[in-house]
Length: 171
Image 1: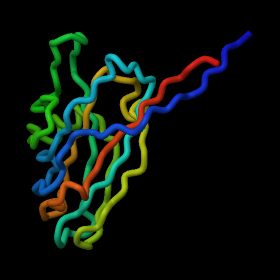
Image 2: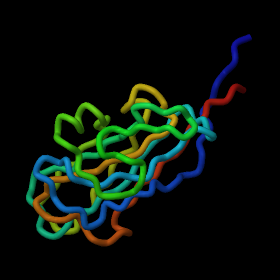
Image 3: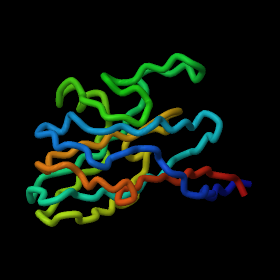
Image 4: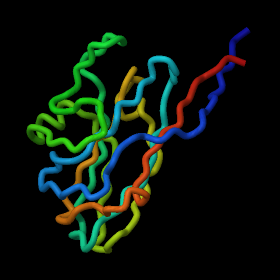
């Protein structure tokens, strides 16, 4: 008899990242990274990520906000972790070496195209980590950068990012 597998969803967990008051970067290489999220003990089969980003005052219309996923280049699941370029696994401002380095080292997850409206909230529809990366990494995080010509909204509560873990269980 074949086993049927059904998804089991966890409670939403906050992703530690501070995208408030982040300066605009014309090439979207300067931005902010999240603290790394570990899947080593949870062993989720997938994660669904969503959030919201809020524009600053008088952004330039039709500019963009990019959400990227970073995954270690090497990870022995103990202590030796090598991240792409300047990514270090801690919530902090970072400037990637170049667009090409960013594009080759990170996974592009989502793009927001902004209006010229101040303080507009942009919801980011849920996306699957497996869809973005092609596999479920042991550790992962977000990198967010924008070229809106103004700093992002400066209120921390106007930005939020979270994920829901999914495990498939036989029934």
